[in-house]
Image 1 (cartoon, rainbow, N blue to C red):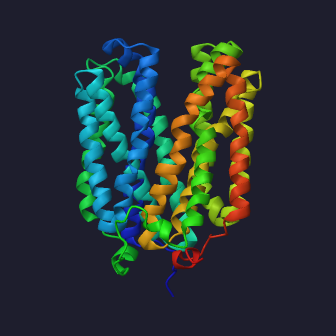
Image 2 (image 1 turned 180 degrees about the horizontal axis):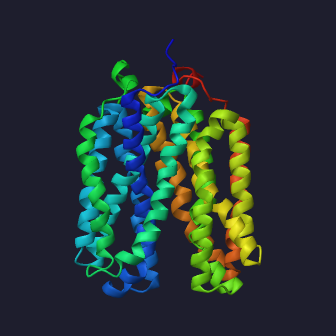
Image 3 (image 1 turned 135 degrees about the horizontal axis):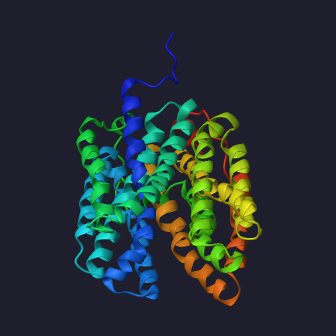
Length: 406
């Protein structure tokens, strides 16, 4: 008798494809932070302009909504193919940018395609893999994003020494993407999308709000929003805090971040199996609690050893909360609304917290300290967990048709 949870050859190829594609979500986001000082020097912009640049580019994560929701109308394969091609093109153009304005525009568009690819990858992963192993697949695919961040952090210092400087980071980054663009020719449309009956409301902007799933959508939007209020800042401002408030050197910071990033990886890749073994709700308790403890400790403790240990949990948490929310966001809606629900809850409602939280944290830090400003955000994963436990059902090891049923 065949094992229904065993992956087919196509599913294994798809697993690799999605993992490699998602690798670049982590690579791209870290790339910008790593090259920023060099970019500022070449383009002649100050710190304030750099902050505005990052904020402008992050708006692309919201605009990605337009792409993601189209997957419910034209199919997952078409949108995923478009996002990979678009991200490859605009990443290459970013390396050729003749001015800061062109760079900002190219990176904004690249971010739209990148986040669109990430969202659709999660939808495809949820629809194409066995229920008993769905958490594992979502966890590993997301784990490759974290791996991309570490890889980028490792190669950028070397690439900055090349004749092309910061531009080489984008030129090197597109090489695997070009290979991925060829590999996508073997990508099939998901079976669930192919077999669904056409929806009379397909494409309507507010269609999902005229369905019984409106309440679920708003609940998940709130959970994403609360989560991003913390995780968007957990790593971003740690160097500022460590240098200014704990007297650490650049070398100390690099050592701590490297140890913490590498140390968190086994935990990150184990998240999916944890969600399949414990279930989504109990897994969320473990993950969101560790995230809150890690962020609070990373911005409140004093010794480098204690801060580094907390940073392990913080880096783990920033990655680990995503498989939990990706699972819920893909499992709690029917096929005809799945991508639209992801777009609304993550790209629109949730990303409000993603975009505004650095501004709020920075404003609080000016009046107090980075330690206080970021450590207080540790309350938000706990609030998100409370909403999960009070509003969302258990979905582990159940088919999507069952988990989407109200």
